[in-house]
Amino acid sequence: MSSTPSKKVQPTGPAPIPRTRGFRNQADLAYERIEKMLVNCQLSPGRFLAMQDLQKLVALGRTPVHQAVSRLAEDTLVIVRPRDGLQIAPINLARERGLLPLRRDVERFVIRLAAKRSGASERNQLLHLQRLLREPAEKLTLDRFNVVDRNVDQLLIAMAGEPFVEPTLRPLHTIFRRIGWLYHTKVARGQNLKQSVDCHIALLEAVADRQIEKAIAALDDLIGFVDSMFDVLEQEIDPSLLDCSLAYLRPH
Image 1 (tube, rainbow, N blue to C red):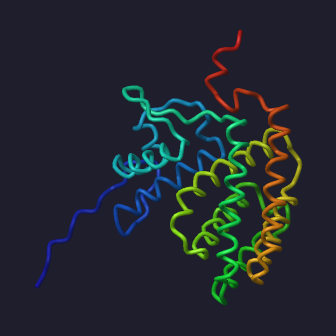
Image 2: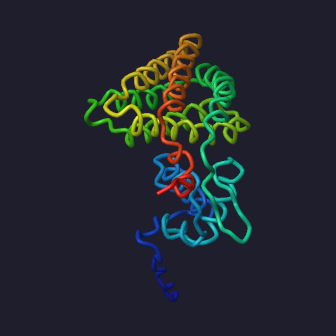
Image 3: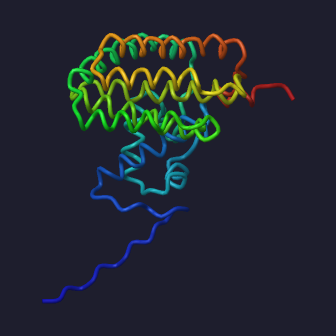
């Protein structure tokens, strides 16, 4: 019995749309693509844009992009302005620094659970991420590090097995990855990623070995390093990098 072949759907954006198993996956893909552009400030804080512009940037359709934007709005990363489109939320350094204790406390909870539940399969994944972090400095670019860092975050949350923490930590991780990107690219040029990499490696080793107190200590070192970034950013960052609309207010 034969069937009529369905028509192939041609992508409308600048890049082919990856095959996905369902609508929910396309929404997740849209979220990940937008998140990446938020982290590296390709979507500048304070920028206004139309939904259609965002669809073109991520090369996905209207519905998954709308769903992703709804999640990003809940995450306080995007502001939906009725009749005016979207605005990438400006960066408020004082507010974001104030969120560090929340991240620390929730991640301590996650790491304790992850270390307790670490098995052979999880250990293999942790060791694989360690190997990626041990790549030579010239190969481990900031963009590559952020990809590994995101995988670390996702793995630890999955190992913890507590679904309540993911909606809280997901936007916090995005916020602080962007802070790291600004720090390393705008005010600490030439400084390598060694301190952050060392903290991550120590954390992964401790979780893999189920050494909870060592894992907590590594996390605290990492949070302390991120906190120190704010000292530098507050003194040296160009305010227009935190809110690009400020650039238009300067006298010419």
